[in-house]
Length: 530
Image: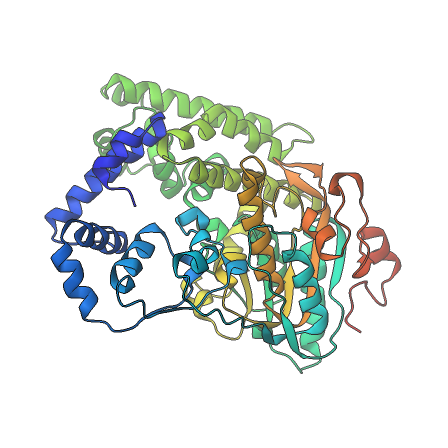
């Protein structure tokens, strides 16, 4: 682990210096409160054992045996503590699976379990290869995939259950059709009254993917739970831009205007906002109308005056675009994001590249949502889109209620799915850049191996039926872009060649699903369970 005083010394980039400064202030604040967070419990214990040998010996003597679960997910501090406690009596038992080490991004070191035999040469290794969850067909696919990893213990899962339906690979026209057809299949299975919503899981790699599935499940009145993730429309950057759209649609929407009046910062401080509100209350009017009170606005600080002027101009330009014939709502939002320099603002606000990319991806997904609404609505309007968004937030109760709803289809990331199992599993968005994630492709081989382990975790969540799918096109910034099948699909099916050169996926039972086929097969859509 890294202490706050070490973080400043290790910082190289501006973002790292900002993070180190925030880390120092955070540690000072919790120290004043007499508190520690979870990482402190590890880091300070490691430091205590290292600096005070008598304390380490005292604590080690208290335990004759040390047992560790999920050993593949231990970080360096945890590893040091384990060695401090068990290093002398050597009575150590660990349980873990290197093929399920998927938390490298938060400090887990898969090498701890890979090197266990070297660190503890007297240890007896027991291979637990019997699998009581999945069918033979599913485990064959999982074993085939994970064998491509070089840094692993050689082992093969052996099924206790014979047979089973072959896993399917489905290709769709785009991500909307992928979500719609997946939802339709779940609905048809539920209509048989044999299975319940809780028997289904839709697994995805990134937090932007579930939006279209949420939309389709709501339309079908199928209860769902977004596990371990914030609902798309509840994210700060999404709410900010929705507030801009509401303000453009209705400048007298006070709640929306006040949310974005100084987002990104434009010089309208808290005191200026208080003055604007007081003036609006006194005159019985809206803050937007106070903006047009030149005499009052001139009494505000100059930065606030300039900020109000820029906000008025921005709103005016957007409303002018909306008045044009054949206006693109997604294009208008894309221009708004550009004019606001919103993406640059996110880079200034958030210290890590990962968080910036996640926030920017949410902005892109909102533009995609608006483009999809335009493509599907008979007479698309900005107000109509905002109404749809409002309904999306109200159906099935609050996010907290949805998260605790037991009999519901589970929408979750692969990370959240670890340790769980479902009769029906749908692994969606199986394309290069999503899984493996584009960030891993830009870094090193170890990151791709962790992505492969993540895919392996997804496959082994399935008890009875496994479906993997990918759209041939995905919306990017409101425009359709071609996708390429994930390399993992070729590895899963025994065809580990260049995924960028081939469109079709053979091997597993394959069904090509497109709008044209769906229209031609109205009586029986592709993907109907048989």
